Amino acid sequence: MTTTPDRSGRPAELDLAPDLSTLTTRLPGQDSASPGIRRRPVRSLLADCFPALSSGQADAVTVTYGDLLVRWYPDNATYQPNLDAFRFVNAVSDLVPPKARVLDVGTGTGVLGLGIATGADVRRLCLLDYNPAALRQAQANSRTFTERNPDVVVRLVQGRFHPDLLPRLGEHDVLISNPPYFPPGLLRGAEGRTRLTDDFGLTAALITHGPVFAPNVYFMYSSAAEPEVADLLRHRPAGSRVTTVATWRAPFPSHLLTPSGRRRFSRNGPDDQWDAWHDVKVLRIEAGA
Ligand SMILES: C[S@@+](CC[C@H](N)C(=O)[O-])C[C@H]1O[C@@H](n2cnc3c(N)ncnc32)[C@H](O)[C@@H]1O
Image (cartoon, rainbow, N blue to C red; front, side, top):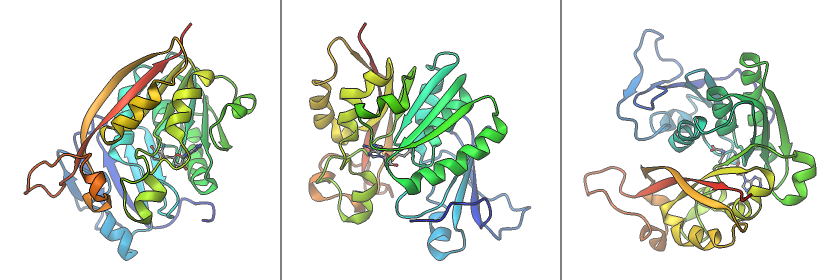
């Protein structure tokens, strides 16, 4: 477990353009006049700062995305913000109704919920995660958010997503989530398993119970999990409607994949440093009348 993150330290500073076209990374110790490392197009959010994190030159990452500021402390428990999260924020912000009550399930650093509350008209935001270390990072980020957006009420709740939580969480207008993408067996090693495998069946719970919490449920999934997600969708509540609201192609570190995992990804060509690609999709489940 980590201590409560503070706002000191040696962060790598990332500036992501609101249209996601350009990323600038500045590492600690770099001359302030230095232009930093500039990427266009942007293939990965963190690739340019991982060496500095591994060597100890940097101990955190701060991402600025328009008016949103999210800091991540690598602690082996809290999922790092990545490009998919910001693509999700872009895709869903315009679909959120005015004065919305938003529930972010599996919030990690809080990037989805805080991002949507920055870009849309959100009145109340609830950030839920079962992992206390992640929730502490979300709390630190929500403090920064609240300083800039004092009218939005932000609440943090620790717990595993389940209908039993309804009395504690209340009803919302929109539920958002980036559940761990992969079913068991696709990833090798502890890193992939702990952060990316849906060990606690969050995708299934979102599909089955999400519409009980909110009339509109938005979540991401990977084409590598298409058979499992298609199967789960057959168990969604009667009368609910499913639409794909966004999709994009994304690279994935192939060293994390088992041989059977690799077969679920496509290759982009031998010269590409990213040799495993998948489609990430954002689904909306609208509860029936
Ligand atoms: C892939 S991470 C996404 C984190 C963050 N939303 C983002 O997009 O960067 C999934 C998060 O869901 C949390 N989680 C997984 N299963 C959960 C469950 N059943 N209930 C609540 N949180 C869960 C994990 O602790 C983790 O923080």
